[in-house]
Length: 196
Ligand code: SAM
Figure (tube, protein in one colour):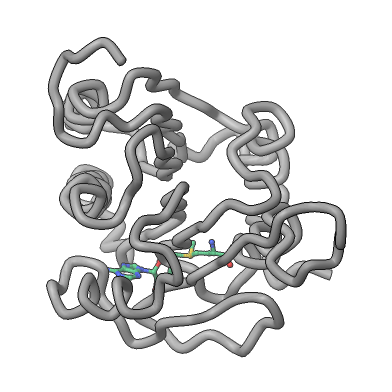
């Protein structure tokens, strides 16, 4: 039982693109009510359910409070754009850096499409700043955005820092929605244009 139907989007993306696997350490940004974290807990084996696989870790961060979930650590009342949040994330991470940053964040929609688009792109750009401190080399970002004129800015920034950047539109995303995801793999730790 998932807390929200958004779980099926992450399941679909992960089945196809293999973002999560046992043992990985994941930060789930915009985690409330917690459906993506539920999926992540299962897929990284955060509860040690599979005794033969490595045990992963899931940290969910949100402006809102999130009901407790076995296998996940939550950082509620936390704004991802606030430097204090970065400090707290670093304190809570068992390893120095995470393997995967997930973001299903969405700002409160104003209904003005262009403005909402810009706000979400800016939130996603924040993830790139965070990555410098908390994403391990060769790590992954999966982030949702609403399509619009500034999407290419985000895509370009991702391409500067990741070797493999894909655009994903899951089937389970309603057809009419402008919701798209970037999947950026192989983080090169701020080293631009370097062939690893
Ligand atoms: N992935 C979640 C799930 O499966 O349960 C659903 C996420 S919901 C679509 C978007 C979330 O992003 C909201 O809970 C919202 O509070 C959060 N959010 C928006 N701006 C944020 C910010 N600046 N920092 C942290 N969380 C934020």
